[in-house]
Structure formats: C-alpha cells, structure tokens
Image (cartoon, rainbow, N blue to C red):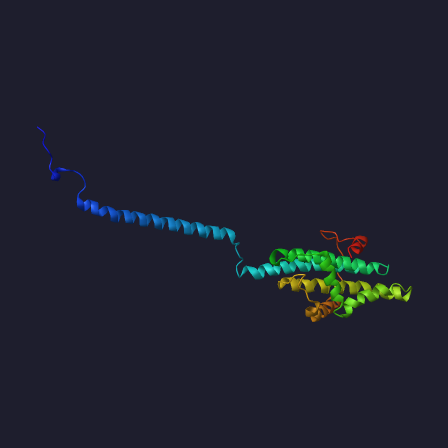
Length: 235
C-alpha cells in the first residue's frame, strides 16, 4: 500500500527560508559591484601614476638648478680660455671668426645642459642670430672685438695694440655671452624668446667682471674646441 506523505513531511525549504534568498542575492550582488568598482579605481590610479612623471620635490629643485649652473659655468670658463687664445691669431677677421665659432660652440654646449629641464632646442642658425644680436647692445666689449681685429690690418703699432687688446676682449665677450645664456636658460628661457635688450645691463656687468679677472690659461678640454679653420667655417 502506498502511503502518501503529507506536506509537512517534505524536506524542501520552508517559506521562511525562501524569503531570505532575495535579500542574500542582493547582498552578494552589491558586494560584487563594490569589489569590481574598487578594482577599477585601483587600476585607474595605477595607470595615472605610470603616465604622469614623478616631479622633483621642492627641496630637490634648487639643488638641481645649482648643479646645472655649475656645470654650465665650467663650460664657459673653458671657452673663455680658448677665446683668449684665438684672439692672438694675427690674421684680421680670421681671429674674429674663430672667436665667434667658439662662442657658438659654447652656446651649443650650454643649451645641451639645460635641454632636459626646459626644452632648449639648439639651432645653429638661431644661435648665430642671437650672438650677433648681442653686438647691438652697444657694450664696449662686444664692439671692441671687431675693432681690435681691424687694427691688425695696420702693420706695426696697429698689430701691437690689437695683440694686447684682442685676447682680453675676446675672453670678456665670451664670458659675458656665456653667463647671459646661463641666466636666460636657468630662468626657463629658450633661444626663441631671447631678447638682448633685456640683458643690456647684465652683459655690461659680466664684461666688466671678466676684464677685472685674469685670463684663464687654456687647457685641453674633454671635448676639443673647433680649430680656427673649422670655427670660422661655422659662421
């Protein structure tokens, strides 16, 4: 005989148990959404950190600037000595072209130092233009280099006077040009926004400072400066 089990004998879930299921499902869904949202936010923060370069701390910036200025000043001292030596060249105009070539080469080296921090893109044509524009500042040192070179066209007294003045004027002009661009690049400037009239007084002060010092003795640099022939060819 088949005995039919009553509804109370069934082992399935009761109505109370079934009522709990929707709330549990919502809890699981909310938890899953929260976890996914947190993972997405962490991934986004990680991507941003990878894209954005780490900036130097406030304390590190002055140290970096000082290191760049020191390195650039060493470059200037090297080319000041070589400019003084080029000023002794007895051939008129060739000496001036040699000094100009050294100054252009010096400007290239200074620009390379500041290139990583403020995007100083060196251009030979632009470099020649800005160096030539400094002659228009009217300082005695800048114009004196050309006058001394022309004096060599007069044998005797002219050659003697030029031989005495040209090395000192060449060194002073190179010193002033070098430190003008150190100041300009260190302040965030580039060759494109250089205005020589803004540095008229600074150029004069640097030239006077250079004339008051003794001319440094040329030494063999790590990178040899261009010879008189190659230096003249760059202008």
